[in-house]
Amino acid sequence: MRFATLQAAPDAPPCLALWHQGAWRVVEGCRDFLDWLRLSESERVVRAAHLGAPLEPAIFCPPILVPPSLRDFYAFEAHVRNARRRRGYDAPPEAWYEFPAFYFSNPACLVGHDQPVRTPPDTHALDFELELAVIIGRAGGDWSLQEAEAAIAGFTLMNDWSARDIQAREMSIGLGPAKAKDFATSLGPCVVTPDELERWRYPDPKRGSRWNMRLIARVNGQEITHAHASEMYWTFAELIAHASRNTRLQVGDVIGSGTVGGGCLLEYPEGTYPWLQPGDVVELEAEGIGVLRNIVQ
Image 1: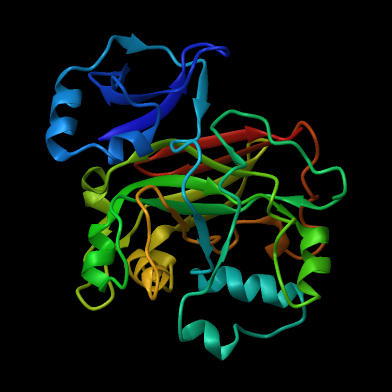
Image 2: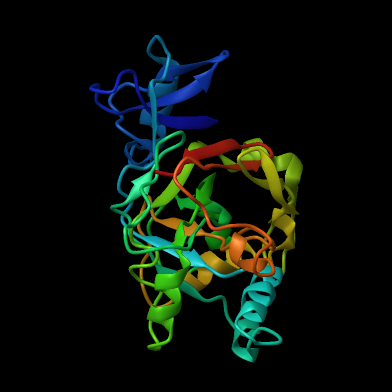
Protein backbone atom coordinates (compact mmCIF):
# COMPACT_ATOMS: atom_id res chain seq x y z
CA MET A 1 0.00 0.00 0.00
CA ARG A 2 1.05 3.57 -0.70
CA PHE A 3 -0.10 6.48 1.47
CA ALA A 4 0.32 10.25 1.30
CA THR A 5 -0.83 13.11 3.49
CA LEU A 6 -2.35 15.70 1.17
CA GLN A 7 -4.22 18.98 1.02
CA ALA A 8 -6.74 19.49 -1.77
CA ALA A 9 -6.17 23.27 -1.57
CA PRO A 10 -3.75 25.52 0.34
CA ASP A 11 -6.44 26.36 2.90
CA ALA A 12 -7.84 22.82 3.14
CA PRO A 13 -7.07 20.58 6.14
CA PRO A 14 -4.61 17.70 5.66
CA CYS A 15 -6.04 14.28 4.95
CA LEU A 16 -4.59 10.83 4.44
CA ALA A 17 -4.93 9.34 0.96
CA LEU A 18 -4.32 5.84 -0.37
CA TRP A 19 -3.12 5.24 -3.94
CA HIS A 20 -5.86 3.08 -5.44
CA GLN A 21 -6.82 2.42 -9.06
CA GLY A 22 -4.49 5.10 -10.40
CA ALA A 23 -5.53 7.93 -8.09
CA TRP A 24 -5.16 9.24 -4.56
CA ARG A 25 -8.34 8.51 -2.61
CA VAL A 26 -9.18 9.90 0.80
CA VAL A 27 -9.06 7.56 3.81
CA GLU A 28 -12.03 8.77 5.79
CA GLY A 29 -11.34 9.97 9.32
CA CYS A 30 -7.52 10.06 9.04
CA ARG A 31 -5.47 13.26 8.93
CA ASP A 32 -2.15 11.51 8.34
CA PHE A 33 -0.39 8.14 8.36
CA LEU A 34 -0.15 8.21 12.17
CA ASP A 35 -3.95 8.18 12.41
CA TRP A 36 -3.96 5.11 10.16
CA LEU A 37 -1.40 3.31 12.33
CA ARG A 38 -3.52 3.92 15.41
CA LEU A 39 -6.50 2.10 13.88
CA SER A 40 -7.16 -1.55 14.66
CA GLU A 41 -6.69 -4.08 11.87
CA SER A 42 -10.43 -4.45 11.45
CA GLU A 43 -10.88 -0.68 11.23
CA ARG A 44 -8.19 -0.48 8.54
CA VAL A 45 -10.00 -3.09 6.46
CA VAL A 46 -13.23 -1.07 6.65
CA ARG A 47 -11.56 2.24 5.80
CA ALA A 48 -9.66 0.74 2.86
CA ALA A 49 -12.87 -0.77 1.52
CA HIS A 50 -14.75 2.56 1.70
CA LEU A 51 -12.34 5.11 0.26
CA GLY A 52 -13.44 8.58 -0.71
CA ALA A 53 -13.47 10.14 -4.15
CA PRO A 54 -10.23 10.70 -6.09
CA LEU A 55 -8.27 13.68 -4.81
CA GLU A 56 -6.03 15.93 -6.89
CA PRO A 57 -3.38 17.08 -4.39
CA ALA A 58 -2.45 20.75 -4.19
CA ILE A 59 0.06 20.19 -1.38
CA PHE A 60 2.00 17.15 -0.17
CA CYS A 61 2.45 17.31 3.59
CA PRO A 62 4.92 15.15 5.51
CA PRO A 63 3.39 11.64 5.73
CA ILE A 64 3.22 12.04 9.52
CA LEU A 65 2.58 15.67 10.43
CA VAL A 66 4.33 15.61 13.82
CA PRO A 67 5.86 12.22 14.73
CA PRO A 68 6.43 11.37 18.41
CA SER A 69 10.19 11.30 17.80
CA LEU A 70 12.74 11.49 15.00
CA ARG A 71 16.00 9.53 15.30
CA ASP A 72 18.60 9.82 12.58
CA PHE A 73 21.32 7.17 12.38
CA TYR A 74 24.76 7.05 10.75
CA ALA A 75 24.57 3.68 9.00
CA PHE A 76 26.44 4.08 5.68
CA GLU A 77 30.16 3.46 6.08
CA ALA A 78 31.04 5.31 2.88
CA HIS A 79 29.39 8.49 4.15
CA VAL A 80 31.20 8.24 7.49
CA ARG A 81 34.54 7.79 5.74
CA ASN A 82 33.96 10.64 3.29
CA ALA A 83 32.71 13.09 5.90
CA ARG A 84 35.53 12.30 8.32
CA ARG A 85 38.12 12.65 5.56
CA ARG A 86 36.97 16.25 5.07
CA ARG A 87 37.79 16.80 8.77
CA GLY A 88 41.22 15.21 8.53
CA TYR A 89 40.46 11.68 9.83
CA ASP A 90 41.35 8.44 8.07
CA ALA A 91 38.55 6.06 9.05
CA PRO A 92 35.46 5.66 11.23
CA PRO A 93 36.25 5.28 14.94
CA GLU A 94 36.27 1.72 16.30
CA ALA A 95 33.09 2.36 18.27
CA TRP A 96 31.18 2.99 15.03
CA TYR A 97 31.47 -0.74 14.24
CA GLU A 98 30.29 -1.73 17.73
CA PHE A 99 26.81 -0.17 17.73
CA PRO A 100 24.70 2.02 15.42
CA ALA A 101 24.85 5.67 16.52
CA PHE A 102 22.05 8.24 16.15
CA TYR A 103 20.98 11.71 17.23
CA PHE A 104 17.52 13.12 17.91
CA SER A 105 16.24 15.66 15.38
CA ASN A 106 13.25 18.00 15.50
CA PRO A 107 9.87 16.34 14.74
CA ALA A 108 8.13 19.74 14.72
CA CYS A 109 9.97 21.06 11.64
CA LEU A 110 9.08 18.53 8.95
CA VAL A 111 8.65 19.62 5.33
CA GLY A 112 6.67 17.81 2.65
CA HIS A 113 7.34 17.06 -1.01
CA ASP A 114 7.47 20.09 -3.32
CA GLN A 115 7.44 22.47 -0.35
CA PRO A 116 10.07 25.22 0.09
CA VAL A 117 12.91 24.93 2.60
CA ARG A 118 13.98 28.21 4.14
CA THR A 119 17.72 28.79 4.46
CA PRO A 120 18.64 29.72 8.05
CA PRO A 121 19.84 33.33 8.00
CA ASP A 122 23.03 32.50 9.92
CA THR A 123 24.40 29.84 7.55
CA HIS A 124 26.46 30.11 4.38
CA ALA A 125 26.88 26.35 3.94
CA LEU A 126 23.46 24.76 3.37
CA ASP A 127 23.59 21.07 2.43
CA PHE A 128 21.15 18.26 1.67
CA GLU A 129 21.42 14.62 2.80
CA LEU A 130 19.96 11.68 0.90
CA GLU A 131 18.45 9.11 3.28
CA LEU A 132 15.81 6.43 3.62
CA ALA A 133 13.57 6.41 6.65
CA VAL A 134 11.14 3.95 8.18
CA ILE A 135 8.07 4.61 10.28
CA ILE A 136 7.40 2.48 13.34
CA GLY A 137 4.00 0.79 13.37
CA ARG A 138 3.70 -0.47 16.94
CA ALA A 139 4.89 0.49 20.40
CA GLY A 140 7.38 -1.52 22.39
CA GLY A 141 10.90 -1.76 23.70
CA ASP A 142 13.93 -4.02 24.04
CA TRP A 143 13.10 -5.67 20.72
CA SER A 144 14.95 -8.53 19.09
CA LEU A 145 16.02 -8.09 15.47
CA GLN A 146 12.96 -10.01 14.31
CA GLU A 147 10.62 -7.87 16.43
CA ALA A 148 12.35 -4.71 15.24
CA GLU A 149 11.94 -5.56 11.57
CA ALA A 150 8.31 -6.55 12.12
CA ALA A 151 7.69 -3.08 13.58
CA ILE A 152 8.38 -1.35 10.24
CA ALA A 153 5.09 0.07 8.96
CA GLY A 154 6.47 1.85 5.93
CA PHE A 155 9.40 3.38 4.06
CA THR A 156 9.83 6.95 2.88
CA LEU A 157 12.54 9.30 1.65
CA MET A 158 14.23 11.72 4.02
CA ASN A 159 16.31 14.84 3.43
CA ASP A 160 18.24 15.76 6.57
CA TRP A 161 19.01 19.39 5.70
CA SER A 162 22.23 20.61 7.31
CA ALA A 163 23.86 23.97 7.98
CA ARG A 164 27.48 22.81 7.81
CA ASP A 165 29.14 25.91 9.21
CA ILE A 166 26.83 25.91 12.23
CA GLN A 167 27.34 22.15 12.61
CA ALA A 168 31.14 22.52 12.69
CA ARG A 169 30.97 25.11 15.47
CA GLU A 170 28.48 23.08 17.50
CA MET A 171 30.37 19.81 17.25
CA SER A 172 33.65 21.43 18.25
CA ILE A 173 32.11 21.77 21.73
CA GLY A 174 31.57 18.02 21.99
CA LEU A 175 27.79 17.98 21.53
CA GLY A 176 25.56 18.26 18.53
CA PRO A 177 24.53 18.60 15.87
CA ALA A 178 21.60 20.69 17.14
CA LYS A 179 20.69 24.04 15.56
CA ALA A 180 22.52 22.88 12.43
CA LYS A 181 19.68 20.39 11.90
CA ASP A 182 16.84 22.11 13.75
CA PHE A 183 15.25 24.08 10.92
CA ALA A 184 13.99 21.44 8.44
CA THR A 185 13.77 17.73 7.66
CA SER A 186 11.91 16.69 4.51
CA LEU A 187 9.88 13.47 4.41
CA GLY A 188 7.93 12.03 1.51
CA PRO A 189 6.50 12.09 -0.99
CA CYS A 190 4.62 9.09 0.37
CA VAL A 191 4.91 6.07 2.66
CA VAL A 192 5.22 2.65 1.05
CA THR A 193 4.50 -0.48 3.08
CA PRO A 194 7.22 -3.17 3.17
CA ASP A 195 5.22 -5.70 1.13
CA GLU A 196 5.33 -3.32 -1.87
CA LEU A 197 9.14 -3.31 -1.70
CA GLU A 198 9.52 -7.08 -1.46
CA ARG A 199 11.29 -7.34 -4.83
CA TRP A 200 14.18 -5.30 -3.39
CA ARG A 201 14.39 -7.17 -0.07
CA TYR A 202 17.22 -9.59 0.74
CA PRO A 203 16.52 -11.49 3.98
CA ASP A 204 19.33 -12.04 6.46
CA PRO A 205 18.19 -14.05 9.52
CA LYS A 206 21.29 -13.03 11.49
CA ARG A 207 21.19 -9.26 10.99
CA GLY A 208 17.83 -8.41 9.43
CA SER A 209 16.75 -7.73 5.86
CA ARG A 210 18.50 -5.42 3.45
CA TRP A 211 16.69 -3.49 0.72
CA ASN A 212 18.48 -2.87 -2.56
CA MET A 213 16.54 0.11 -3.93
CA ARG A 214 18.54 2.48 -6.12
CA LEU A 215 18.98 5.92 -4.50
CA ILE A 216 19.74 9.10 -6.46
CA ALA A 217 20.26 12.75 -5.52
CA ARG A 218 20.09 15.66 -7.98
CA VAL A 219 20.60 19.40 -7.64
CA ASN A 220 19.04 21.49 -10.42
CA GLY A 221 18.80 18.34 -12.52
CA GLN A 222 22.49 17.40 -12.11
CA GLU A 223 23.02 13.97 -10.61
CA ILE A 224 25.21 14.21 -7.52
CA THR A 225 25.15 10.62 -6.33
CA HIS A 226 23.89 7.17 -7.30
CA ALA A 227 23.86 4.49 -4.58
CA HIS A 228 21.86 1.56 -3.22
CA ALA A 229 20.14 1.10 0.12
CA SER A 230 21.82 -2.30 0.52
CA GLU A 231 25.13 -0.47 1.10
CA MET A 232 24.05 0.26 4.69
CA TYR A 233 26.55 -1.28 7.10
CA TRP A 234 23.85 -1.57 9.78
CA THR A 235 20.43 -2.94 8.80
CA PHE A 236 17.16 -1.23 9.69
CA ALA A 237 16.43 -4.12 12.05
CA GLU A 238 19.68 -3.35 13.89
CA LEU A 239 18.92 0.37 13.99
CA ILE A 240 15.44 -0.16 15.40
CA ALA A 241 16.52 -2.80 17.91
CA HIS A 242 19.26 -0.49 19.18
CA ALA A 243 16.85 2.47 19.38
CA SER A 244 14.44 0.34 21.43
CA ARG A 245 17.04 -0.76 23.97
CA ASN A 246 16.22 0.30 27.55
CA THR A 247 13.34 2.47 26.33
CA ARG A 248 10.11 2.35 24.34
CA LEU A 249 9.44 3.30 20.75
CA GLN A 250 6.06 4.78 19.91
CA VAL A 251 3.71 4.30 16.98
CA GLY A 252 4.73 6.84 14.37
CA ASP A 253 8.36 7.25 15.41
CA VAL A 254 10.66 7.99 12.46
CA ILE A 255 14.01 6.21 12.06
CA GLY A 256 16.42 7.66 9.50
CA SER A 257 19.14 5.56 7.89
CA GLY A 258 21.74 8.29 7.78
CA THR A 259 23.23 9.62 4.57
CA VAL A 260 24.20 7.30 1.74
CA GLY A 261 27.78 7.39 0.50
CA GLY A 262 28.18 10.50 -1.65
CA GLY A 263 24.72 11.66 -0.61
CA CYS A 264 25.62 15.20 0.44
CA LEU A 265 27.85 18.04 -0.74
CA LEU A 266 30.10 17.82 2.31
CA GLU A 267 31.56 14.51 1.14
CA TYR A 268 33.18 15.89 -2.00
CA PRO A 269 36.51 17.71 -2.24
CA GLU A 270 36.18 21.40 -1.47
CA GLY A 271 35.10 23.31 -4.56
CA THR A 272 33.52 20.33 -6.32
CA TYR A 273 30.00 21.63 -5.71
CA PRO A 274 28.87 24.97 -4.26
CA TRP A 275 26.72 25.02 -1.14
CA LEU A 276 23.01 25.29 -1.84
CA GLN A 277 21.60 28.70 -2.72
CA PRO A 278 18.06 30.15 -2.87
CA GLY A 279 16.34 28.87 -6.00
CA ASP A 280 18.19 25.54 -6.07
CA VAL A 281 15.99 22.46 -6.52
CA VAL A 282 17.01 19.29 -4.68
CA GLU A 283 15.51 15.96 -5.75
CA LEU A 284 15.97 12.68 -3.90
CA GLU A 285 14.78 9.50 -5.60
CA ALA A 286 14.33 5.92 -4.45
CA GLU A 287 13.10 2.96 -6.48
CA GLY A 288 9.67 1.90 -5.35
CA ILE A 289 9.04 5.14 -3.44
CA GLY A 290 9.37 8.04 -5.86
CA VAL A 291 10.92 11.51 -5.83
CA LEU A 292 11.12 13.91 -2.89
CA ARG A 293 11.66 17.42 -4.27
CA ASN A 294 12.21 20.74 -2.48
CA ILE A 295 13.24 24.22 -3.56
CA VAL A 296 15.61 26.24 -1.41
CA GLN A 297 14.43 29.67 -0.29
